[in-house]
Length: 343
Image (cartoon, rainbow, N blue to C red; front, side):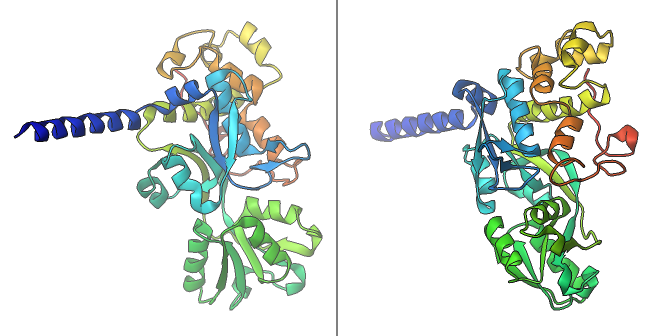
C-alpha cells in the first residue's frame, strides 16, 4: 500500500468512526443539551392533539409529551410540538427531527419492524368505525355496498377497509386524502357517503361538524387499534425514559396519587411503593438518568392517567367517551391499563 492509499484509508476510517459516534449519541443526552423535547404530532385530532382558543396545544398525546418534559427537566413547558402530515410521521423520528412520535398512531407489526421505530406502550385502546349522514338511511356497515368512503392514505384504516370490503363483498370505493382536514371537509361536503377512522377520531370529527346531530357513527367496530407512542429504534436509554414516564402516570392512578394530593402523599405516605414512585425512597431514578423526583414532577405537572383521560376524552370533554367497562379502564376495573412494577 502506498502512502496515498494509507492516508486515504486512515481518513475513511476516521470519518466512519465520527459518523458512528454521531449516530450513537443518545437521545436523552441530545435532549438535555438542547433543553427541550421535540414531540411529533399531527395537525388536529381533538382530544389527542389540537389547538385551544388561546393557541395552546392540548390532548392526550400532548400530555404524554409534557409528562416526558417534566420527567427530564421538571418543567412542563420544555417541549416543542412539531405537527407533520401522516406521510412524514416515521421519517421525522428516524431523521432525528423528533424525539417522540405521539399522534394517535396504531401499533402494527409493519410499523414496529420495518420503519426504524420502537413502539413502547398503548395509551388508548380504540377500534375502527364508520360515520354517515343520518339522511343516508344506513344503520349498519353491511348496508354500505358500493358506497364511497373518505379515508386518510397510508393509515391502518385504509388497509382495514379494503380487507373488510373484500371479506363481506361490499365493493366499497375508497377516496383517499393526504390531509385529515381535507378528508373531513370532503365528507361534510357530501363528496363521500361515509367517513372511516378510529372511533375516537369519529367522535372528534362529529363534534366539530357544523351540525353534529346530522351524523351518526355506525355500531360496528371492524378492527383493534392500539394507539401508542414510539421513539427511534435501538435507543433503549431514551425508550426507558418515555415508557416509564407513562407507567408513572398509570401507577399513580392505581395508588390513588393525583396532581391535587401528590404533595401530601410525598410528605406523608408510608407506602414503600408510593415512596419509590415519588422518589422519597430508593434509587430507581439512577437507571433512567433522571432526577430523583422525576415521577413526582410528572404527576404534579400533568397528572395521573385518569386525570389525563378525563380532561381530554372523558364524559365531560368534547368527545364524551366513557371509560367504564372499556379496555382503557384500570386492570382492577376490568380494563387493560396497568403499570409495570416500580421496584
